Image (cartoon, rainbow, N blue to C red; front, side, top):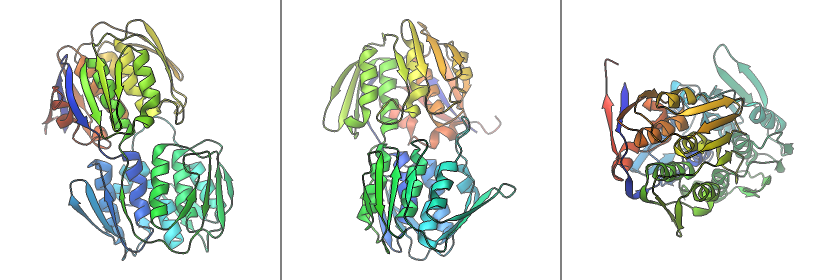
Length: 423
């Protein structure tokens, strides 16, 4: 078992470089196997989900190799299996994209039920209903934990999503690339990684228009070709380091990001009392650690991201006064609150609303990451707390953050990863 040990109350200063976007790469890697050829993915984050995908694709008959730390070569020429039901598939939430990718290429797929972080019910019914509308027959075997999909052919149609689901939008888009005619996705999600996935598909020869708006139109093609593509920077990783700088105080330049993607967070950090400087590909956060209480409400993009909600909760725990944090995306994303209370946070949760009274000092404690973004919140809390904080369940953090302890140490944090085999 590994833990992160943090000795807090050190200001952060310097520059941190953001890795490629986790939420984009977990969709683009499956998209790469839709063409029989060799694709190269650049600006790759070296995270646990990528390693799980590589193992999964190799098991399907692909040949994946890292050219360097940030570049993955995927030869999907000889993929001969549409059964993606290994343990690596079960570890990932985003493994459901293999349904759309395999269904598109082979007209059939058997995929294990997705795993990943558990912070409430996250059904994939919109994914399945969308794929069914394209012509797939679907059966679910909950005893074996797999979903089987099969279609004689896929036919374009008009699909209205009851909720602007990111996963459903991408999954339908993947399968629709190989559907006959035109598929229209209405009330589509608009997140940056949807645009990134559409751009990659178009480089492969797909005809996807409207990504980034609430209506996406896909004109089916008979064949895709391989492509070389660079992943966009990770909006959530960038936001995590921006919030850490705000909470701990100091002067941090977060580089290799797209400032426009950060608008909702930047506005809230300014409201909380931080100084923000924006460049073409960086944002500089200057903070003295004295923060104002503010209210935050998560929404679909371009609103405040739910994936930054736990990290922002830590900021509000250190802000002077009473703040209100409302979660509009997931119904049970406040599971981490119990862990923050161990450090002295004053948080009262009522359904989707948390009322937070800022504290002058947080105290180090033993805590556990309950999911990926909650794990990042524990790290930020440990960085600003007095004394030592030890964080367990680091495997969740590793799913979305590349070498988080190295990047934070480069900013002056006192953080190390420790193996505890007897824990």
